[in-house]
Length: 487
Image 1 (cartoon, rainbow, N blue to C red):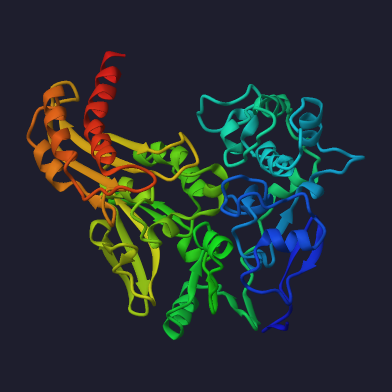
Image 2: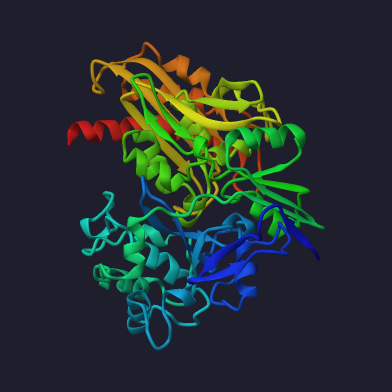
């Protein structure tokens, strides 16, 4: 096998040492690359990003000139996306003769039994250990330790042996990181920029453009290229289905797609921001999305997957479309002719089909302001966290005169899992507008909502179950509203 790069060989910093990426197949994932270099703590458990056994730490940007250690699934991302990046595995966090505080607490509190999943837990726990605002408690969450440790930072890591209590005990026993720790001091400087990467291999090519214009030019020439950001969708196809691409184009580090801006008219979210970054940057200022994020897959997936990628797949069961439909979001598509705006309600045309041309990218998502006053996100799945939805409902209502007996002046409801595409529940919206916000109105509109879409029977849920869950959304919202009034 031979590989060529236009200017120098690609490589990463792996556990503090340079490690060449030259000569690898563009479809090789980071996990296989790391294990081939002898760092076998990270393991393949599911190859789908659901177990966390493959977790590693990478250094990511955290605002202007700062960095953040971030845990991601190594089994999903192409190794070449880490060109120029700094990567740490469990072996790089500490050694048997010099244990890191995270490793020590896991050992003395019985957090490791068979040990298969332990290195992944260690990486996720270490990333949270180094979170800059951890000592202050970070985001408001019921499952924080007294040390500020957010237990949800470990979501996406599975363990069959411990019952999790010893792992929680280890997490909550951690003190503050030593300010002289080199991984703490590293956070005060910028993370590596996305390297300009061009690799040709007999099994395919990999390109990381450094500007949006360059990316569009590539797609003009080769419209069938596979576009990847977090690769949390395509990475599964590579691992499970043996999918391959003649050309892979990585867009996750394009600066033009990584901004977040509030104006008087809208909030604009860069499509290449990860879900975790969007959650952190919004900091609760879009309440409907604040409800969505904790229910979206796991922290490990949200650390890698992007908001644009979730829309770009065109999946009818993606979690962000129902919420963004309720928020009347508009997509900014960029192509050779520049930007064009497409309401999300007009974006999906069929099962995994959209109006986006092959030489266009989703550059940003715009949410109009002001926001509706009453919002909610309901997700029905077989597990509370880290699962694909059977049904998802985004609700946004404007009620004049207050929620107790006020009049519904505007209603927007987005649905996922009940048709070939995410849809707006327009009949239900019409059934609500002009009516008083009462239990009777919610019940009557709920019957209309139960008839929206074309739900089907599959392994996740029956059509009848999906319709039944739709009928619960509005009464649930009303009950939550009256409870808030009562309190």
